[in-house]
Every structure is written in structure tokens, then in C-alpha cells.
Image (cartoon, rainbow, N blue to C red; front, side):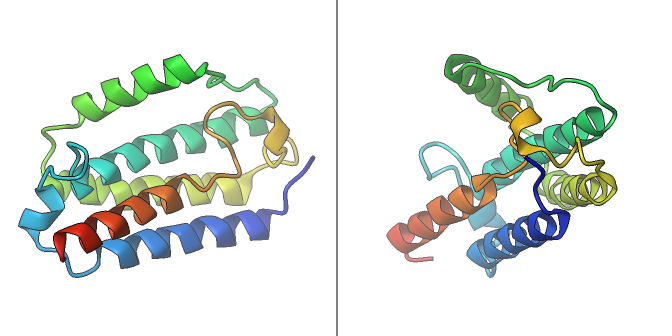
Length: 150
């Protein structure tokens, strides 16, 4: 089933706006404070960055007529998320912010060039074409801010 490109682009841009609104006004110390289930806002951003990178490569792969490389079990997904989080744990806030912005743009660019196959949501694995992933993280950050009084 082909998904409308413009709808997808708008949804992913809206989620990014929602995430940016959720972190707006936080200081560097607040962005790097690991007080949300052991994660910082920076860690959430690095996590989203990884999945944007995966999504961009998946759109390109599937648009080329290839199969998804990311059909994972829930256990594999959990292990991968832990590995990626740890791998980027010590990156500077500046690096994470830059990669956060660049990875989203790479994904949006790939989506803009996607073929009909690349717009077929049924062809995707864990890095789904249609996702509320970033919005979920924005919600968790809003809850964390409310709890902390930020």
C-alpha cells in the first residue's frame, strides 16, 4: 500500500517541530542531565538520530527494489537500542545536535526521492516508514520536564 509522500513529509516535519517545542528553552545542563530513566534529552536526540539514519537508508534501499535490512524481533530491537545508546553516550551535545538535524534532513530528502516501492509502508521492518517514534520521545520529555519543573 503506497503512502502519500506529502502526508509523510508533513507528518515527519510536524513530529520534529513537536520534539523541538518539547526541548525549547532547556539549558545545556538540562539537556545533558541523565535524570529521565537514566537518559538525558541529548540521549533521546542521539537515539532518534540513529533511527532517522536507518530510515533514510531503508527508504533508499527499498526504493532501489531491495528488501528491508531491519526486520527485528522485539528482543533484537531492545538490544540494538541499548548498543546504539551506549555507542553515542559520550558524544558532545554539539555533535548530537548537529547529527540530529542532519539525519532528519537526510531522511526527508530520501523520502522526497522515494519511488512507489519506497512509499510502500508494508515493505518496512522495525524502522517503519509511518512512525510516531519521535512524538513518543517528545511526550516523554514533556512528562520529564513537568516532573522536574523545567
